[in-house]
Image 1 (cartoon, rainbow, N blue to C red):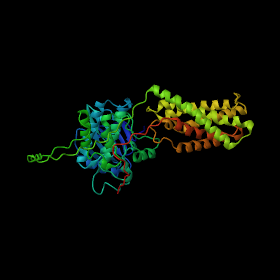
Image 2: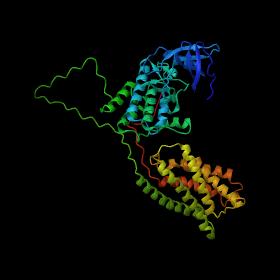
Image 3: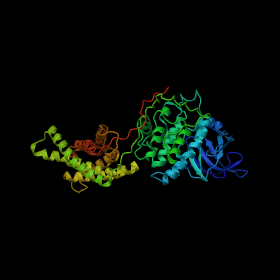
Image 4: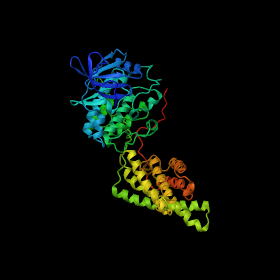
Length: 507
């Protein structure tokens, strides 16, 4: 990571830089020492300085034990603006989460969250929205949780809650309403819910391979709460509601809910008692009928779906593999009925569809069965499928009568088979088609995607087309594989959130 300034330089009068700490969308942060010997962090503001400096100016006089202190706002001789702030030597939360891929212990997660909640509640009480809550901005030093980087914050006002076109924040923690320019304090409640989810599970609820995919999930997809401890389900369901009006009214209210969980109380937050206690109602006259208050309907409770044992997974896998043979046989018969080949070529034509499709389906089902309930890097899975797909390609080439004379036409055909299936397995996230809690039981989108990638790879890799008999069958095999693995894989409908999902409408 290359910084603008190096150790020992003095771009700002009164401070000597020691080393660079980090870089972000709004500037660079350095560890520095003042001429008097005080250790500080200096942030060089880059980009759209008006947003950054306006937030810093509003926060200079804020003081709270759970906030990183901002000391001053200075200008160097180049006209660049610097923020002088407290230096935190402790680790950020994201580093600690990296050491706990399955989540933090509940007691530790609770302490981190309550420190975060106190800091954000203080900001909200002073009319400030953080807008960039994420684990990298939350630190632990000497047993004290501290929240930093709130210079991006923005004052809450009637003219500033909507119509904002500059989107700030980190996409994994970004509330749905930010896409429409709403920056109320509920976006911090949503981000705090994401962080609490990540501390309890070790992963964020919405992930993807592009910012657009993640943002769309924030807008439309309910969070998967099946891995959340049962007592935290009501808290996270409310904090992660798509509609901001359905979330907690304040961070204090959400913190009380978390405290009530650990204290053994109900997950719902008790209201603070009023200063003047209400007078008790007078007793009814003797002989008068006492009105009976109707019982409150039970609140809906999210129930986590039970985990499937390894033995049950193996049994399901065996059943799925048998169903693959059945569905592939039906598909092959249908294909030959449509093609109507000569009687001598009938079995050959069926075999060229049947055997590659069965091999491809089995090659996807076996590893995906044990990936479904695991958190893992999608790229590691892609490369694993790349190797498996190459083996499938070699097997299909051998079943098609290939030989190992790699310098001949047969060798060129073998390389074409190998490359085609390896890249086809790499291009798509096939394991999602077999996931027990996938969004839909069956979808045509993966079939179309498989056909598209099959066509592209066939045109790019198989030259000339005559080296493989009927190369169009390769596309058919991929499309049938995408359909069959969905049909034979068990499916359980994902749990619905507690609150009814509403279509968001913002001014």
